[in-house]
Amino acid sequence: MEQVNNRSIEEFKSYGYAEDILPKSPEKRDWSTFNYITVWMGAVHNLMSYMTVAGFFVLGLSVPQVLWAVMTAAIIVSVGYVLNGYAGSKYGIGYSMLLRSSFGVKGSVIPALCRGLIAGVVFFGTKTIIGAQSFNVIFTKIFPGYMDMVPGFNFLGLDFPTMISYIILWVITVGLFLGGMKILSVFSKWSSPIIYIFIVGAAIWAISVAGGFGPIFDYTPANPTSSPLVFIACVSALVSNWGGPIVNISDLTQRAKTDKAPMIGLPLGMIASYILFGITCVALLVGTQIAFGIEGFNIVAAIDQIGNPFIVIVLLLTLNIASTSYVVFGNLLPSGLQMTALLPKVFNVKTAAILTAIIGTAILPWKLVNGTQALYLFYSFIGSMYGPITGIMLTSFFLERKRMLNLSAIYLKQGDNGEHKSGYNVIACTVFIISFLIVLSGAFFKDVAVLAAISKSAFLSGLIISGVLYGIFYRFNNHTTVQERETGVKAS
Image (cartoon, rainbow, N blue to C red; front, top):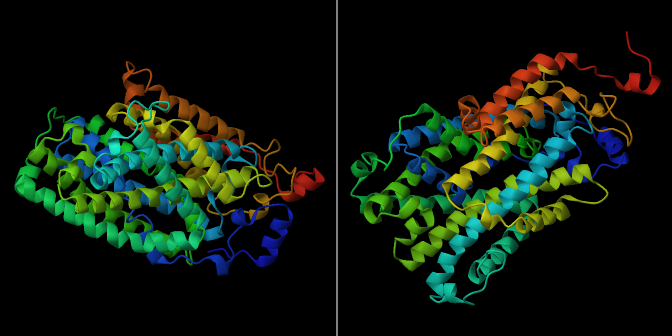
């Protein structure tokens, strides 16, 4: 771990950088291994993850195949966390500033916008509308006529009860974020045990109504498949669901007390959580399908079959706690940090996060979550951005820079373009654009078998393509040092 001294931090601060994006000094590195174990443990059990796995059965995977897909995704995500989080824990810097070493001072704007604005906004909106739909069930259990309020009301495709549910969840999510990192850390630490108690109880119930483990493991989907491409596409979709945190994991690892804390905590928490997630997810989705024939493996409808209003309410609230934790840590926080880094005189993290939540609603997210096909197209788009960004960041840090960063070339005076004369790492930016277009093109040119296969595994394909391309061409970069920029004389 490289400890940045307070003198350097004060120097960087004098350049106009906001407190939120400065390197973390030793006294501000307050996350231990336990924090990293628990940070995603509850968030794993979010409604969108359950919807994603439900799509696996719709696409024809068997129960063993689904479990293998879930665990394969967990391992890939864990590796991504460790590798892409290492620079953050070593130097105490977050994603928005780390990007400067890979893409250049000005070039970093491109991936920052992709993660902070585009992906952060879309994920906030989609996860909040999914949570709002579950709130409809909760409120209907309490007020049986809830869904009959203001019949005929239609606001840009949103009915009145769902609009009220959305507003309530929006306020809760944003309010939790505005409470600050200490409240978020406490929330993450204590919400996980609550989530696990109720989610395990629901799984036991589902196994019971299905007649035991046997019928669940013997279940055959309506259109079974043995295609490796379908399996890879399912793994990639679940990885893409966590692709955002992989990209900006340094926003969390910069708070690490030691380098080992996130290296041990993140994989341990993610893999252990996904073992339980895989079991409970399969039990709930398949168990209720066997017992009640739930159309499309709808997780909210499956939980509603429990019957006991109190249990249904508590369980859906539990899953919403998990989703809220994911939205806060995985979307509002990185969006706020990225926008603060781009426009420090306009935003701080909190005001930027509020704007993210507003734009996330303005894009009408309820139109983006209609069915499995729309959801997987969304994952293809997100993976086409996240994969290439991650591949370039990893190649730049581990191969090009040999795990060494110069913070003085990252935190620059206004007007200084840094190591690249134009402010852009042209090679990195070009590789990113090419990789993005190659991966996404398969979603539109489905008749081209190679492109279609690449698109189905968008995150993984994008990571590999961009990593290989940047690994070949980064040697053509012509970095300049601080002395060279000030004197205009090339060092010998």
